[in-house]
Structures are given as C-alpha cells and as structure tokens.
Amino acid sequence: MSAAERPPAQPADLLRPGRPIVGMSAVLLPCRREGGFDWVAAEAHVARTRDAGLTPAVNMDTGYVQLLTGEEQRTVLDLAQRTTDGAFVAGAFVADRPGDPFDLAGYVRAATEIATRGGTPVIFPSWGLNELDDDGWVGALTEIGAELDRWIGFELGEMFVPYGRIPSLDAYEGLLGIESCIGAKHSSLSRQLEWDRLALRDERRPGFHVFTGNDLAIDMVMWGSDYLLGLSTFDPEAFALRDRWWAEGDARFHELNDLLQYLGHFTFRAPVPGYRHDAAIAFDLRRWANGDGTPPGAPRRPDADREVLADILDRLDAVVGREPRGGR
Image (cartoon, rainbow, N blue to C red; front, side):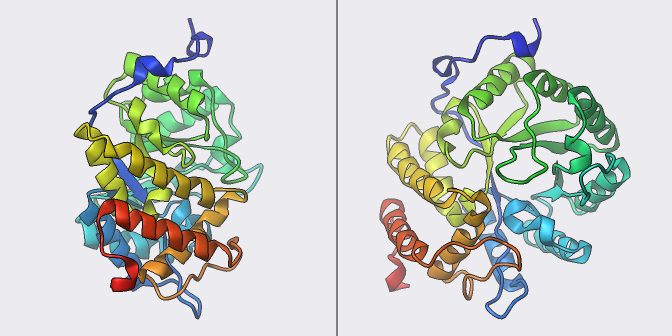
C-alpha cells in the first residue's frame, strides 16, 4: 500500500503527553523607523531566542529572506553564528522566477554558506523546485542531500508564498528516505495532513522531526510534532515555558497555549504575510525595537492592531509571571 492509500491518521493514536518538544523560532528582522534593518535589535532578539531555550531560525519568511540581498543574508548568518556559536538554522533561499529550472548549484551554494558557519540549512521553496512533479521533487532533494551532511526540508503552502506547494504523502515518504534530512517544516495549515505525516514518520523513521509550521494550530506538539514557527518570535520565553509545562505534565500548558493560539489566529489572518508587521508592532510595544518599520513592499496591518496586541502581551505577562510592560 502506498503512503497515499493509507487511511487518515487518527489523532487519538498519536497523542504524546510528556514528550519533550524541540522548538525552533523564525526570528523577525526588525527595521528602523527611518528605513533599513536594525541589526542591533536583530542580534538582541537572536540572543533572546537562544536564552529562552529555542533554536533561532534566521533568513526565513519571518526574516524577509525573499527581500534580502545576498550581502544582507550573509550579514544575518554572521550575526547568528556570532550570537549562537553555530547553534542556529537558516533558510537556504534561491531567488528564481516561474518557469526557471531547478537550481541545484544555487541551493548547494546557499546551504554551504549556512553550514560553514555551523548552522543547519532549511531548504526554502522556489519556483524551480516546486514546479517539479512529486518524483522530481524527491529527486531534487535527494541531489541536494547528497551534497550536505545535515539539513531540514520545507513544505510551504501557497497562502504564504506564490511558489508554495504541499507535495503528496508518497513524496513525503520519499523525503523520509533521504538520510541527511533530519526533519521537515510542514506549513499547510492542515491538521489532517500533518497528522498523516506524523503517523508515517512514526512508522518509517521515528527519529525524523516533523516541525509544525501551523501557526493556527500550535498545539500540534501534543501529537508528536516539534515546531519551526514565526509566531514564536512574538514571545520566545512564553513558548519555551509552554513547552516545559507540556513535558512536565503541568495543566497550565493549556491556558498558556490558548492565549498564544489567540495571538496566532489574530496575527496570521489574511493576508497571512501581514503577521510580520504585527510582530514588528509587538517588538515596538516590548521596546525590543525602535518603531514598527517593515521593508518596502511588505504588507502592513491597520493601526487598530496595536491596541489588540498590547492587550494580548499584557495577558501573556500575567500568565508567564513577568513584570507588566508599563513597569519596565
């Protein structure tokens, strides 16, 4: 029976109470009010993420990788290496256009830039990769995998980027067979598709990480997913505490998860890429950055978001046991 012919996975069979969670957080790249990136605030947030116990993920969608020059991407990598001593992951991004062929050499160059700094590459989608059929997609990743010691795959839906694609479960089974791939981020925003991948993972390769990218269902960690989320950049400390409470069997996990999920549903509403501006507003409210700037061309949220976000942040402070923002 092929993977696609399997019956849908049943969540009751997958629940994993007390399982330690591996958390990776896609780091926002803050911008200055007057324009340009705020490298000081960016380095501080990588350190903040590291200190919370999450693995920083740079040059991802949350870090505007599609809008960065090659030099800016390398600046981010140097910053991450310096701050984490190589304990980071980063998007290996290839900029192309519809109809362009799969660029193996471009991916290997991008991944090598990351690996030589000690980081783990995340193979970011592209037109050339995702316009391949399922067999071609697996074949292309196999070629990349032959050149790398360790990397993470990435399924990304079209609601995030126009060149996104969620391959079939059969293709995912092929990905599980690539030894150098240690896991894959799954961003379909579908619980069932992710449950199906978890069931297949448990059967075929239990050590493989399914990193949920479902910012609308961050409780997927209850069923065996780890995570690589943009939402966690709003509050790495709260996510790390939530994770610890799950591992300890502390019922407070659910209260904190509910509040973080409220944040996710609010900030990841359509158009989904606007969540990055909400994160910038949260950074400004937290005094983690000077202003809520975004790069030219990035979608922005209405001013009314600020009041809602301030309320959520205050409620998070109360649950986590932090000093209120006004007292800082």
